[in-house]
Image (cartoon, rainbow, N blue to C red; front, side, top):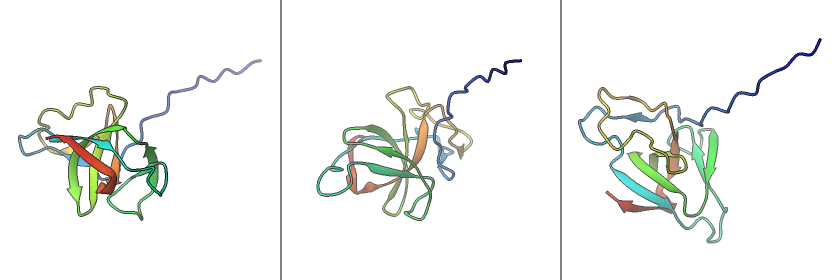
Length: 118
């Protein structure tokens, strides 16, 4: 007997603590780019599950990657990203809720983010 196992696509990485919406404004008000990751440091920007270096690294972004900037906590930005797909964050989300896709989400340090719109 042969047992066949179907491979399921991996679920997108999601931040554990990225709550969006509730105020009648676009869920993510700004767009940005990852810049400066190659200037004397790592060649990537770590995406974390929460706003701080103590949270688990769930992904990484690279120079020129586009993101949606959604919220802030000190020096950390809550972001949504994912290959230019429609992420559902360009309009209000009511009531406020944890972001669950379809794109990836996480937290990054704002020192290598350039706001491009918003």
